[in-house]
Image (tube, rainbow, N blue to C red; front, side):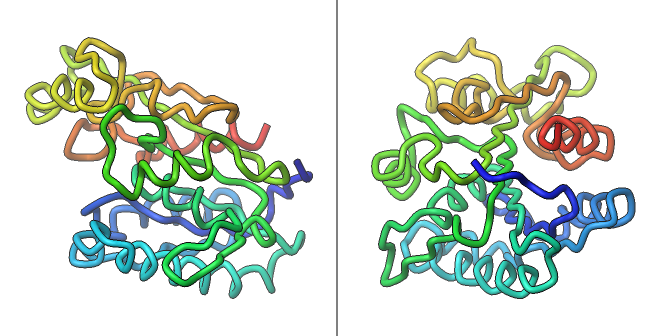
Length: 233
C-alpha cells in the first residue's frame, strides 16, 4: 500500500436513489475544514434506476473516471481519494480493478490510492446481480496498492436517532442481506456487510445509513469528522 497524502483531492460517489446534492455538506466540510479539492459525481434518481443494468453502472463509473482524471492533474501526490456511500462504495471497488466491465477497463488503482466506503453492502447473502458480481470477481481488498477503509454504522432502532422508517424496515433489510434480522446495522446495511474483508474497519456508533433512516448519518458533520479522522490516521 502506498503512502496517502492527506492533501490529495477527493471524488465522491453516492448511493442508490440518493441525489448528489445530499453529499454537498460532506464536500463542503472536506473543502472548508481540510482544504481539499472535492468533486461529487453527478447522479440523478434516473441514473440510479439504470444501475439495475451494466449500462447504468458504466454511465456513473465513466463520470467518476472523468472527475478522477481531472483532479489527478491538481493533486500534490498525483493520486486521488475515493469516497463511496452505500452502493457507490461497491461500484468504486470495480472502478479500482483491472477487470473488464461493459467494454471498459477502468484500472482506477493507477490513479487512486485510497477508497473509503460508507455503509456499503459489500458481503451479502442476497445481493443484486451486479453487486454479487463485484464480490465474486474482486473479493475483499483487491488492489494491494490501495488503502481500503470500510466504515460501518450502528443505529439503536429503539433510540431517539432512529426514524420511524428504519424501525419498520431495518430488520427485514438485515435479514435479506445477512440472513439474521437481529444483527447490528445502520438501519439498512448490517455492520458485518459494511466491513469489507481485510479493509481497515471503522465502526461509528449512533449512525444511520442516510437521512431517511435517522437524524445523524455518514454525511452529518460530526460523523464526517469521525470517519475522516480515522481514515487519515
